[in-house]
Length: 274
Image (tube, rainbow, N blue to C red; front, top):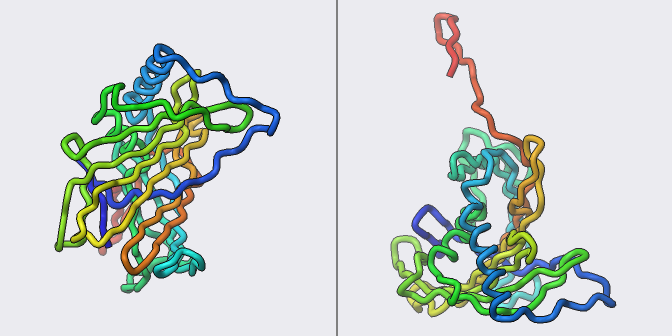
């Protein structure tokens, strides 16, 4: 299956659109911001994005990935395996350890499960890549998106192949840097990004991929007594000439990461910390 790679390890981060909470039917969106107001909004969003990774704490959480396939036409999705991994975010790096397959512990024996897609990079990497690739002129106003009791400012963006750091690979058979486009949805008061999307374009035929779409939704999470905005759920969708593949991903159980100590015993009965 194809995988996506950036300047760091990014194996397919492909997310299908998830619905934001709707406002009441009587609520009306704000007026369209003027060009000067749009520029101010983008400046606030860019500042948030540039500081996002540096402001994240070290943490541990659970990543639950539910796999689905639908054949050539995505009308009837068949559920496959459910993979539960322990995700450690430490010093800006993500490390996943698969612990359960279909709620059964992964033992030392080799086990077989279906892994059509593997996802990494939800924690700021897509956000960082977009804003590092584009000046403010690379974004265009899209409109207001209802969310909770307010509205999010939506901007579309497009990264051409010359400035793209996103590459799509098909095992050892083919690899290509591809352009991509998408949207960002942010709080107009703080610049906080609550959703980001990405859709690679002009995918070479040798990669055997018809389309890819990416959306990551964020939510407030409390870690160590402080509130952070972190990925909450995502859906991964890949369309090939012969199949539709989807991963529904959920991030739960966030808690502070601290160095863990283990005690191991040597054959002579003495103990040593590790």
